[in-house]
Image 1: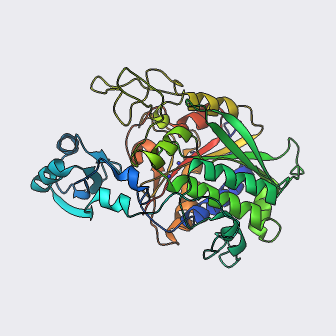
Image 2 (image 1 turned 90 degrees about the vertical axis):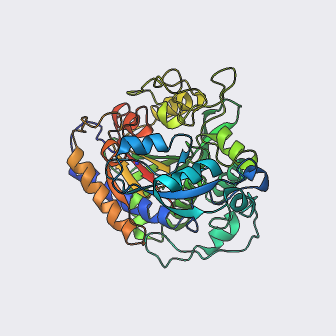
Image 3 (image 1 turned 45 degrees about the horizontal axis):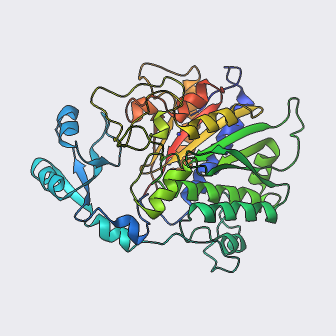
Length: 424
């Protein structure tokens, strides 16, 4: 639902080893976060309105060149990344576009009726203290029961709305006082609170300079519900198994984890109640269009919209870097954190583990070899779950993407940064 760099811009063996363990933990935790589903698998009946006749197709590229493919896909919603190495691309298309694609390409229908699938899918849930327990498993050691945690917080059974999410992490803070604390990152355009959840052992790390900080964010894109769900699962695994699972105990004794489960709080709520496939935030950008793609608006190597782009586009990057209120709040908050060494950004829909850079394919991190080694460690952990992941730099794995969280986190606060995209 993907980046990595050392504070001193030198490779530190101990830090890299600990980061690799962190990567292993997060890979396993996300893989077991919720029952596997596409990011668009759960919605309210109202959120299905407007997508009658739409289908999700897998379009096989075969011998078609990328230029002709991109041209043919105009007017569709591309779900998987289209790169030089792609053999297929998954897209949502209305009936007319779907029929046209079938005449030009070899295709496979993944979702025959998008609106029907939305209407029939899971409702947003509220937090209950006596809900039914799901099958609890610790993501790292595999056999540590977490049924009580699942029962209390509803993890693994439903996608939660914004208010239910807030109730969940407040309940976690009450359940584990001192180990879990909640703070305010800032406010969204519609004045919703963007919250950060700190999970810590409370120990100082026992080393000069104090403990290192890891930041995990998700929900930059509104419709990617599985990413906040995965983040909540990681939070609960860390908090509930500290002191009983050695690997988790070692992690929390070494790192303080700060989670921002939903950055795009306005868009997330809008996707829950109005439009299931909404991606951007809800900040007006013109007289007729709303929303900025938050993962194109970070203030590092930001790129202005292309000559053919409009503010109505789903990937509109804004008219200037940091224009989105949520991005300003998030970046200002992150730069206040001490000893930041790692940054993760969770997304969907794909199975990718990516690191900088995205803004240009000829730009390489100074510690690219270390990043690749950590990515391989994470890839092995995720592949073991039966979900094969591709790894690499953002630009080489998918395409040029300026203004991303990963590039900013690597360059600005100088942390190790990773983008992870999970899917079905």
